[in-house]
Image (cartoon, rainbow, N blue to C red):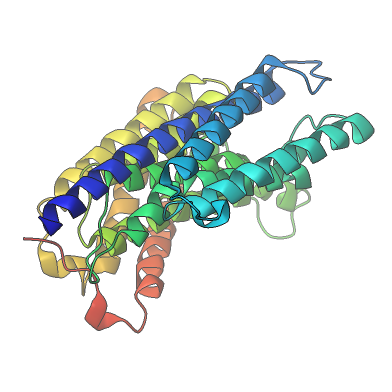
Amino acid sequence: MLRTAQGNRIRAGGFRDMVTELLGLWLLLAVFLDGWAHLNVPGLETFFTPWHAALYSGMVATAAWTAVVIWRNRTPGQPLLHAAPPGYRGTAVGVILFGTAGALDLLWHEILGLEVSLDALVSPTHLLLGFSLFLILGTGVRSARAASHNGTPTWTPAAMFAVVLMTGLGAFFFVYASAFVRPGPTALFAPLPVGTPGRLQAELPVVVGLVSYLLTTALIIAPFLYTLAAARRPLRGVVTMLVVAAAWLPVVMVGVRPTAVAGAAGATLAAAAADLLLTRVPAVWLGRRLPAVTAGIAALVWTGQLVAYAVADGIRWPVALWLGAVVLSAAVAAGLAVVSFWGTARSLPEPAP
């Protein structure tokens, strides 16, 4: 009887969390839609736009749903502050913070005008909006952590969805350094000897491109390691979903370009192959040899992108550069695995048989 009641609570909580994450998807898509407008609609000079309406209507719906969840969880005589289900205090804080940041953003725009480019991604009010969205999107993760029983994680589809959405939000705020939207290896680069006039200017796009590979690798591998540590096994399709969030949302927001679409498609197919291989990886590799696994995932994803680039447009970087970008990305992925479980060798995730 006790197990049945506990199972019913978990299922009810899973449904509640999934509704919250679907509202989070609404918010995330609205954020990317607003970003698309800032990049592609000339003369955008007002706060009151259809794209802001999509975002703030989604927040109103999320606030209403959060209020309903807290009210339904309240017992007679219980203070409303303590009535939030596990994981939803952060959601409520995110909703309140979003409203505050939205008011500040309106004031900012009225006084200083609208941001039109990179400044929109690092505007303090926009960063505060992003932090509040991060709290809301993370509801499924916090709820799953709170539902853990006797050290056994209760990992739900809503928690997985939350990780993917938070990865997408990270991709939005780091879109200027995304390896999926920058021209990277498809841009012509002719190495110049040291001391040649203009060498630093010529190398700058390549430097940014290399950094974008490292940052985007971290954006994909860090959530993968988190899900592995929390669920203690590779979740089905996790690499593919993370690559989709990190690649396709920025590609569509910046403007659909054939080469970028080809690169995103190649990386997605490679990620699907990585997920298939993860189902066949020996259990010991997810413990003692985890750095090799994450390095392999990164190398496979970027190789898929580069192959697609070569077919769709051509690779114009020297072989040392594009191959070095893959090797460096694999090293970053391996390093993240080492750091994630540093000093905890005995508690590395053991996948279920």
